[in-house]
Length: 197
Image 1 (cartoon, rainbow, N blue to C red):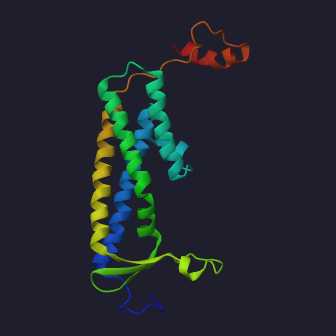
Image 2: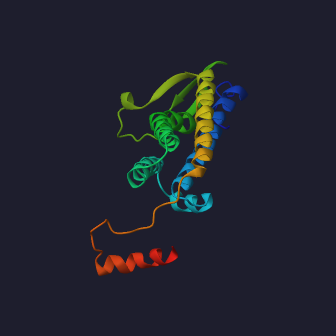
Image 3: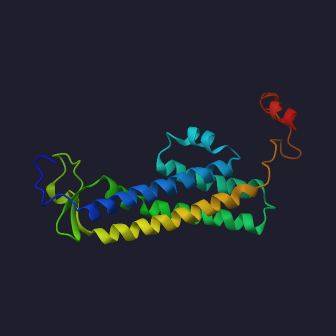
């Protein structure tokens, strides 16, 4: 690249480590979308259409809410289903805890310090941010590869959970709570669902 000395450009191995983090995270994202689709009994493409503009944080919130909703609506779920929901929550927790690191690796500017280490900094800073608050660090590219392996392991867990969620019971039909009459407005909104059964 013009303006960057060739000695500062990351090596092929360093670039591959950064790319590996980006690529494995994409596989993890795909499995999370699949889990969302299974939890709403939807086709994966339809679920992606609904969630495409959701921020990563909102997707994670949706996964948490859906598992809670399933447990509230289906108190008779099997132990296997409860374990699958626990696994979804563990995956969501891991993603939430590691997304900032992923963003740093993928979005920071990384230059070669030597064959093993990279110097990175967040290059989108404004003059209003004092120089001591600007983020920079040294990183060993092997740590990026290790992180990529962790992401891959989590993507495998997510894909296995997605497959396991294929046997969820049907979603219950909307009805009023026992002894609670529906208002005419709510009744008319729900009537198309009742006719399907």
